[in-house]
Length: 184
Image: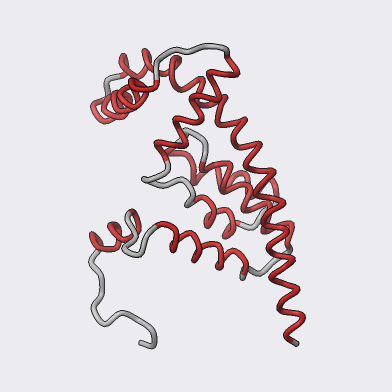
């Protein structure tokens, strides 16, 4: 196979490379951005898809992100590939920062400070363990104090990042398309 691997990767190696790229996250993001620029479709459709991906990536609804992405793509008539590419902004390395920012913005909106910064990650870990062990009492105790501010904060953060993403993608698509026209 031309430009293929000599040795096939095992499933474990593929997952490991996806979660922790050998060449780093910056290179992976640059690659995904280049793929975004080369998508077929209108600029608006691609930009709407990018907005959907970014906004869904900053929500605390970890298990529902793919479903929400497809639903919003259908409603907004957005480019599905663009939204899937930009959803990768939310990954293992960025989720703790995104969720903490969601929580802080939500607390500012609600004018509350339910827990301090140090115990936030402990509470998130408790919720994760409670889901694993089906301990619904712990989930119920932590849901209002953490998930409500995170959800409200994620809507604000998604709105801000959505506007920035839309105009940035439109701008880069215009530049990229104009370079292609000048070559001919």
